[in-house]
Image (cartoon, rainbow, N blue to C red; front, side):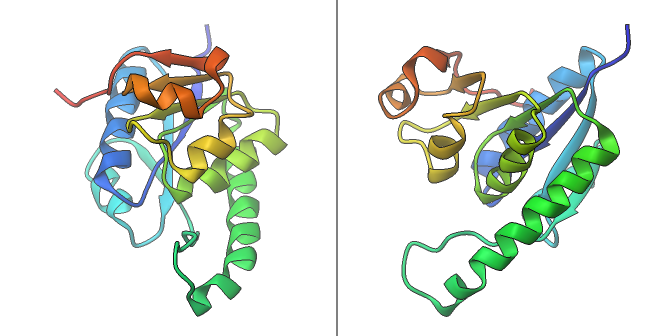
Length: 167
């Protein structure tokens, strides 16, 4: 049987990155090839570059909660980051996408949807972020770290498993 290739995306905070890394390590133990996608010059790039996991960079901007002139760049950076994510998907031909939240997951998740790649999400928090709420509509499953998140997501797709940790 051919090993599966899984694209994992996370970024912005360790709260998104470390669960993604724990999932990546477990999938590697099962024989999967992991491609981790993150923002260039970021915390996720620093963390993942110290592992044996392939890291692919995109340039994505978060959506700021307060007004800033950076909002004017957001649509252009979003389109660029989705296009770069499609390029990565075309290069590695993944069997699935796993997103653990953060703005990086949004671009890669949209690209996965456009390329008909199955989407799986892991939400660590009791209140899901914008990315998880948006991508949850397209996900096959949403794995919850906190049971309280279920009420904000597609209930039929939500499965409580707890948060993945590195050991």
